[in-house]
Each structure stands twice: as C-alpha cells, then as structure tokens.
Length: 268
Image (cartoon, rainbow, N blue to C red):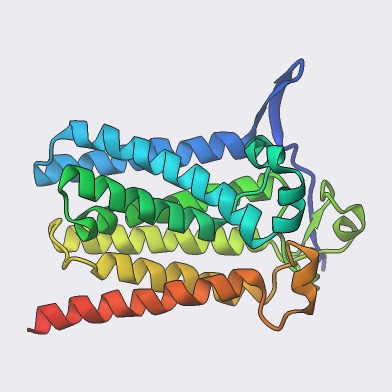
C-alpha cells in the first residue's frame, strides 16, 4: 500500500514580477488581513452604533502600530547588533523581518493613543481588535508558508514538508514540521472562538475578557509550537527556551490577569 512519506513544497513566493517590481504572496496576505479586519470591525461598529468615521482613524493607527512595532521588534529582539551596525536597513521592511511580539506591543501602544485621543475606553477598543488580530495571524502565517520560512524541526511524520525554497538549502532537503500551518490554523480557530463569544454576548462582552482570552490562547499556542520550530537566529540554539517563548510568557501572564479581572467584575 502506498504511503506518503513527505510533501514537497516548492511554492513561488512571487505572484508576478514586472522588471524589478514584484508582487509577493506575503504582501498580499498581509494586506488581506487589514481588508478583512476592516470589514469585520465595520460590522461591530454598526452593531453597536459607533460612528464609522472612527473606524477609518482606528485603522490608520493599527497599520502604523503593526508595521512599526513588528519591524522594531525583530530589530531589537532578534538581530540588534547587525541592525545597529546597518541602521538604514531598519527601513527595508520589504526584505523581511517582522516579529509578532513587537507587533503586539506596537498595536497596544497605538490603541492606547487612539483611546486617549478619542476618549474611547481602551478595553472596549482592544476587546474587538483582538478578534481581527487573531485572523491576521492566520493570514501572516500563510504568508510565511508561501515564503518557505519559519518552519519546524525535522520530522518523520507523513505530512512533513520539504521546503525546497528554504533560504538555507541544506535544511530544505529534510522533511520538517509545517509549523506555519499548525500556528496559522490555531489562530484561525481562536478567531472563530472569539467571534462566537462576542456575538453570544450580543456585542457586550465584559471589558477585558476577550483581550485576556486572546493573550492566553495566542501566546500559549506560540509557546507550545516553538518547541518544534527551527530557531530563527543562531543564538537561540543555545537557549533552553527560545526568544519567542520568553517573549510570550509576559503576554500569557497579562492575559490571565485580564481574565481574572473580568471574571471578578462579573461575580461582583
């Protein structure tokens, strides 16, 4: 009986190219996360009677917070010495190098600024934003899959992927865990769970509960999957817990705090 031994992955990261200009799957999927996020947030705003013009402004804050936070997160968490020696390269976002933990910090800071400026409760804003951020996580990990990056350790499981376009050719010769898929579909499940809870509460969840649940689930998943993920930078190979796990722990603790706070308010 024929048994599949591995899956050969040779996807071209570019959709098309005109001269030196290329449209890549990662960029399209990244942009799609904002497009679908906007549509979902628009439904929330209309359901709750919030002026739609605020959403356009909120979207601007989100885009800036996400890109700046993700880029600086990668620069300072993973390769500070190289980027400090080549500071102009910090601006070269198109060359890759975005960190989800940096994006989380950037988003939180952007939403704090938006909440202060527009006099909207921070927890009201972020409880709704995290729903679409979970969906964004799915799109971004699918972008990583199309780039043949951020994959897992070698595996003998029949769904192991041969990443033929890996930036490290020798690593592409061994079947590996498709951790982009594991992580991406985990985020998709979390998105549907948060969305279901939002509508179950008729758009009126206890302030902070969805935010806390998001932090615990998303960064909890990240901690678990990192155990089978190939290190992103060399220094992680000598660490008991890698940088992704260490950076995830404070978010999980913060999530437990917000869940406990919300449950305490409900019982009170």
